[in-house]
Length: 139
Image 1 (cartoon, rainbow, N blue to C red):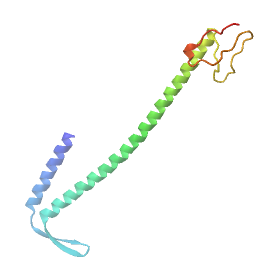
Image 2: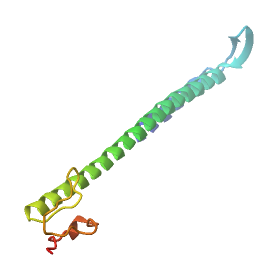
Image 3: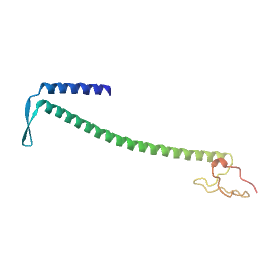
Image 4: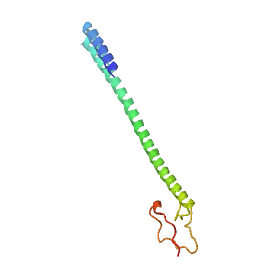
């Protein structure tokens, strides 16, 4: 950044020196009209207009990149949220698998009908959390 600033400053000084050394009156023909200006003023105005156009084009590119970054950040956030949701699903399935291995019943498991064992009373409601799973109560 500092190197760019130094380069711009040196270039501006060179243009200013060139403009001062060329201060004769010149005629500018523009849209059929004739204007007379000092050559140094024409050089400085041309340099300023060129710099303004360069800045405008640079800002346009930065705005375009900023919009692309915003879009990609949204996609990243959506993907991260999806990963979190999938990790939660995997954890639930792992807990259910562990519960099934240890002989505990899992009520309302996704894709399965509630377990029914003859002679064992079904719980009145499914557990709110898989950590609350207990052995079924025998009647």
